[in-house]
Every structure is written in C-alpha cells, then in structure tokens.
Length: 91
Image 1 (cartoon, rainbow, N blue to C red):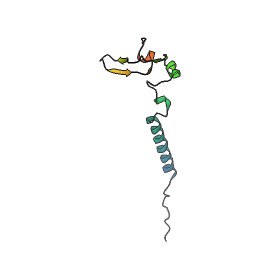
Image 2: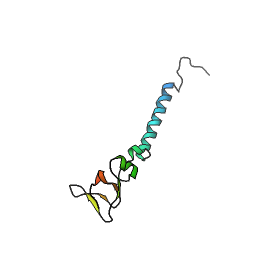
Image 3: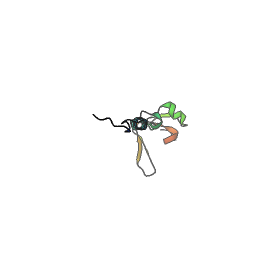
Image 4: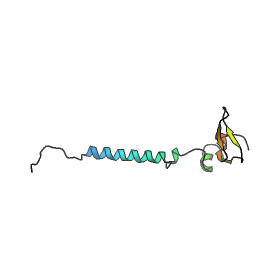
C-alpha cells in the first residue's frame, strides 16, 4: 500500500463548520414550520397574556356568529379571538 503525501484529509474544519451550520438552520426551520417557536406561532388561538400584549383582551365569539371582511368573506367563525386586533365591537 502506498501512502499519499500532500493529500488533504477528508474532513476539514471548514466541512465540519458548514455541516454544523446546515444542521442548525434545518432545525430552526423545522421548529418554525411546526410552530414550536412562539414568536412565529401567533394567530387566532392566542392566550389572554399575548392578547394583552397586543393591546386587546381575549374574547369569546358569540355562538353562531361570524366575522366578515369588507368583501363579505368569513374571516373568523365560532371561537376565541383578540378583540382589539380583529373585532372592536361587542357580541
């Protein structure tokens, strides 16, 4: 068997660093898309605390009612929502 001199090793420091960065980016992307990072997981299912942080309070939508936009499309139906953000009136 002949030893090759001057040949770089298969795993260099750059390869290891790039692979680690790729793994970190992929893990963060999976966490974002699965809703495990709460910063990206805000929406109609907010808790009372996050609603208060947005300047509203958590309200119960009246049974059988719906909220429509200017084009008369239903944007929310039967559930909880942040009053000040989506709907400012009372049920």
